[in-house]
Length: 77
Image (cartoon, rainbow, N blue to C red; front, side, top):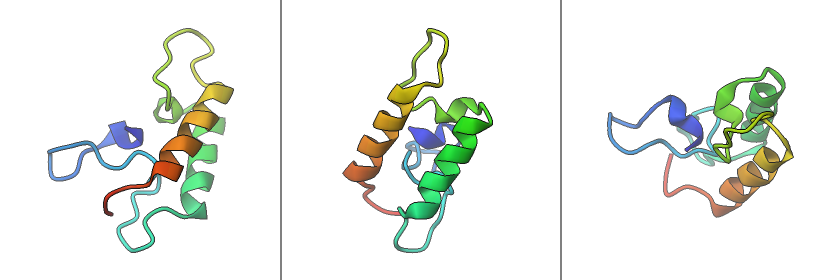
C-alpha cells in the first residue's frame, strides 16, 4: 500500500497509487505520479512500492510497481 503512511478511517490501507491522497475524482491523475517521483527522489521510504529490503531499497523496480498499481486503479477516493 502506497499510503502505508496512513489508513482510511483506521481500517484498510488507503489506495497506494493515490500518493497525494486526493479525495475528488479522478483520484488517480498525473499529480500522483509527480508525488511518487518527489517521494522517490527525496528517499522517502513510502516510495518503496515493492517492499524490498535489500539495498538500495528504492530502485527501478519501485517505478514498475507504482505504474502497475496505478494502472490497476482504486475502488474509490
